[in-house]
Length: 140
Image (cartoon, rainbow, N blue to C red; front, side, top):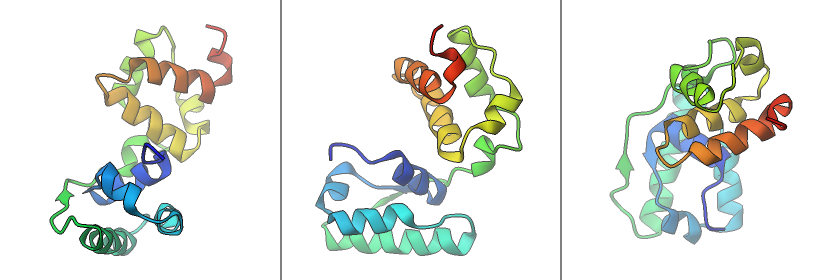
C-alpha cells in the first residue's frame, strides 16, 4: 500500500499525530486494520490511540514522532454548515453546495472534502471526490 487510507488519516488528524508513510508500511496488515478501527470520539479514545501509535513508531524505528495540533471534527460536522474552505473550493468548480447536501454526506466524505479543499495540489482530487460523493454533480 503506497498511501495511508483516509479512515486512518482521519484518526491521525483527530489525535494530532503525524505518522510517516514509511512507518505505516512497516506495520503488519493486522496492525493497520486495528489502528484504522480505533474510535476517536472522546479525549480518552484519542489519548489511547496516540499511545498506541507512539508504541508502534518506537517499535519500528521512530522514537520521536511529530505531534501536531489535533483537528476538531466539528469543522466537518453534519450539524455545522460547510466550512468556508469547502464552499470556496466548490465555487471554484461552479458548485453551489447546500447545507442539506453537506449534512447528508457521511463523516469520512465530509472529512475528505474538507482536507482536499485545504490542499494546494488537491483541486483535481477535490473535483473527483465531489463527483463521486455528490451524484448530481457527476455530469457537470
